[in-house]
Image (tube, rainbow, N blue to C red):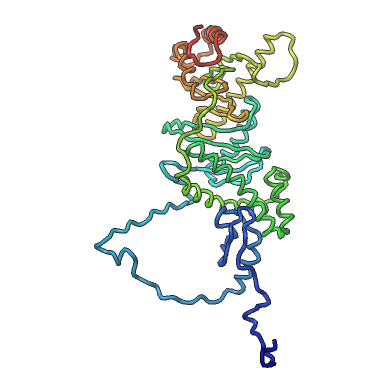
Length: 430
């Protein structure tokens, strides 16, 4: 450059470095601006989503990093300066320990398992191997319960036989992938966790494609979309599954830490039901997994598929009742055998705010009453109480193989439900 006196002046490179880089990165998801130093995990500080653009900058920063300046550590703290004057209460920080058998959260809430499995039984993630059997149980419930109830697996309430403790499994199925959370928590919080798991699975798959498989951004996006849409899940090799699970585990901790931060936003109540009524479609009574009463009250609402054709309507009805009983007993035995707990109810979602339920009520001498219903689950106990007066006398002794008294009870119950299947009012009298 020529100055005012006509002399040649060299401008130092420090003013215009040849490798000048961006001073800020804008998150393509939420628009948040990130400035140096950039986060090492390449996650947006605002929305927590992965930013591929940060990868190259982080890599360069590692190469260009210089020895940090040594600063003298200060020993004085606010509490020591104000000692005797003001008490400074340390802020309590709740940590998330994924290695724990039970992840303690807040307000008595906890999580024992976060899991992901495909409808085709390919397991993608299990946060706690001690409860790995719940992923297999989830697939069994999805196959059996949805064939009976005709919806998407939603929730299951388990009651421990030893401690009489109630714990919940909450499910979220999307694109043939089932997300599971198991523990004690309100419905709203469980729903939030499951939706976050779905979102982070896509970002984890993108990470595996971009960082591990060295795909470009466009191919990485396509790879992630295939994973979360359940396409080619069964074709993932062991290395891909390992990397996917490892990356998702890191994000699991982030999800639960955000869970703790959002306590003031979340409500502690379970989600209510819009409908005021409940309708009973099937009733079964069993003893030691042996069906003693099977009563299909109406097959108009249930789509029950069975092999063969029958000219006699009574034979067709008996076949449908037998198939329902067999599937329900399979669910109960499978759940109790795996978890050591009794399912109180299993729900599937039919549509917006529309649910169908399979409920289990235990009586003495290992008798169980099973009801298939639709509507408001909060009304089911009052319907069960209507039946107690007739059921209790027959459950005072263990089942001996004599079906005569149960056939008489079946006739009585059928007459009652012919009068009313939708409640309230909670009475069979017109």
